[in-house]
Structures are given as C-alpha cells and as structure tokens.
Amino acid sequence: MANSSHDVIILGAGAAGLLCAAIAGQRGKRVLLIERADQPGKKILISGGGRCNFTNIHTAPDRYLSANPHFAKSALSRYGAQNFIALVDRYGIAWHEKTLGQLFCDGSARQIVDMLLEEGAKGVVDLVCGEEIADTSHADGRFRVKTGNRTAEAPALVIATGGPSIPKMGATGFAYDLARQFGLKVVEPRPALVPLTLGGDDILFRELSGVAADVVVRCGKTAFREAALFTHRGLSGPAILQISSYWRHGETVGIDFLPERERGWLLETKRSTPSGTIRALLRDALPDRLATTLAERLALGGDLGNMTDKALNRAEAQLADWRFAPNGTEGFAKAEVTVGGISTAELSSKTMEAQSVPGLYAIGEAVDVTGWLGGYNFQWAWASGWAAAQVL
Image (cartoon, rainbow, N blue to C red; front, top):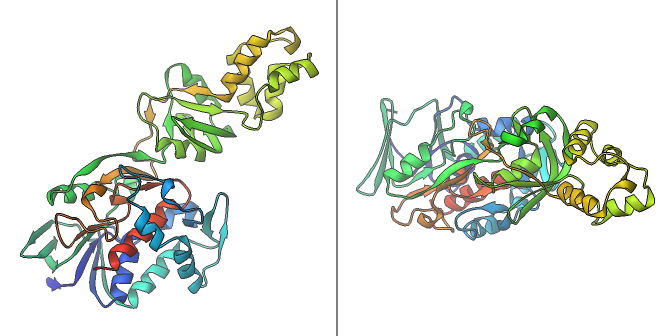
C-alpha cells in the first residue's frame, strides 16, 4: 500500500477518531484511520482507572468550556449520552453509574475499544498503527498524507489527534500545527482537569499530603462540590480538577471546608456549648490533621465562650471561603484534558468542517471544547465524531 486512495483519511485512533471512522465506514465510505501509537484507543484504556468513564447522563452544553459556549449544542443534541449508552448496550457491555451521573464499565475499558473496532469492521475502515505523519498537503481538492514510505490521498481529512495532555501516552500538539498549516486559528491551549500547586504562605498545607475532605471549591462564579485532596505539591481531587479548568494564573481559589454548616453556626455553638473549642469542632467534621492545621491558622485558642462574636464570625467566614493562591498547575503531564485548541470560529458546529478549507474537519479534544470531569469529554468525542461522520 505504498500509494492509496480513500474517501476520507482520519488522523488519530482515539475516542473521536474511532467512532467517526466506524460510522463513516458503515455509511459506505472508504476510510483510512492512521494512529501514531502502536495500538488504538490508548487513552480510552487508561481512563476511569481502566474501566472507562465513557459518558455522563447529565451531559449538557453548559458543562463545557469554549470560547464559543454555544458551539457544542448542535452535536450534543443530535448524539447524546443515551445514543452511546444504546451502542454499549447492544454489545452487552455491563456498566454502572458511580456518582454525579458518571457511567463506567463493570469490566474493562478494553470492551469499549473492542466495540469501536468491531463497529469499524462493519464498514471499510483500514486501521494503520505505529505510523508517524511525515507530511500533509492539500491541492486540487485532495488531501495527501505521507507516512514513512507510503502516501495516501482523499477528498476529506479529519483531525482527531487530540491535545497535548498526558504526553507519556504519546499526546502532542500536532493537531494545532496541522490546523495552523491550513490557516485555522488556535485558541491557546492550557492544561485542564489538573492538580494545582501551592507555594508561599500556602506551603504549610502541603504537609497534609494524603488528607482528603468533601468541600465546595470556588473560582470566580464557578463552584464544585466534591472531594479535595492535599498532595505533596498542592491540591488535587475531583473538586480541584474541576475548578482547575476555570482557574487562571494570578487568581485565588476559595474552599468551603464545612459546606453543610449554615451561616451563624459558630455563634450558635458558642451559646449552646461555651466550653467547646474551635479545634474540637473541626475535628468532629474534618480529618484530624486538617482540623488541627486549620485551627492553628485561625489562631483562636481557648473556649468559645471567651471569644468575641466578631472573632467567631471572622473565623466562620474564613472556613467558608478559605483562600488559596496556587502558583501553577502540574502541567500537561498530569492534565486529563486540554482547554483551548482549534478555534470553533473556524468550524461548522453542525458538521465540524473548516469553513475556509472544504473537506477538512476537526473533532474531539483537538477542538476548543472541554468538558467537566466525569465522562463529559468522552461524550464530546462521540458527538463530534458522529457529527462529522454524517457528512463525510
């Protein structure tokens, strides 16, 4: 196959590329699917602790970040979580809902990859793995892709190579380089769903490494209630990963350590139990090491009855919005996804086709659409891949 002709060439056999190839193939298109890794779906295989958090039943456009918050509406409305669940069910893959609408395989993420490959086998899909893209060009309405000593051409080219998150899996910014080659704008990519690092006055909290608590985390007008985890470098856990997508350098992050407590609870406790202490109250609600650290930072020793109402109100306010000033993130190496990517202003929200380059498409994480933690990014991969496949 030194030289070959196809109806469509898809670059990247991840979630979006695999589904797009399968559907296009079933629609009678001759598809060439090229993957630089030694096997398809490597990110799928490690996702969800090896069980693949393949979608979220609460999928909605407002759970995605993009320079154009309306862009994802079309694809998500036409191929939603229930569509992918139906596909999973047809293959008899057992699954369960964990928390907050997250769906996981009961068995292995391998089942999802095998399902997508089997779907591809129903059409004409040639999958080639372990191939580096040497050159890509476009002339006379044809795209030409060179990989080593082979050249393939087609009237349609789909960019499905993802973003640079998790480089140890082979992830790169290739999609952005290719987009720029064809004159498409790229929204500056940055790590998302990533742990935050602490320094300065916050470095004390790194000594709590391994301690977790159910909290509310805020950044700007956005808030998430889930677990936060202190690490040897800073902050992690689901709540922190969620807020990291919204956080920018120089901003602070607020944590409500006692989200169940109603306003005024400390004054009420002072009146009902004047002999109580801040440390004892915090130990009743939080892990011991965290409670001790917070009590020490509040610097309110002694009985509640001996403290002024003003001091207690100040302590309550701080516990409800404890400010941290992250000095960075753990970067793309630890990021689950990427915020930014190929600008949605360049693409059709219905077909994912580049408006200025007919026949060129971009899907999945390569595009400036980033979902929350918990299966949302897989659903965008399925939806955007499906949308492109309808018109290839």
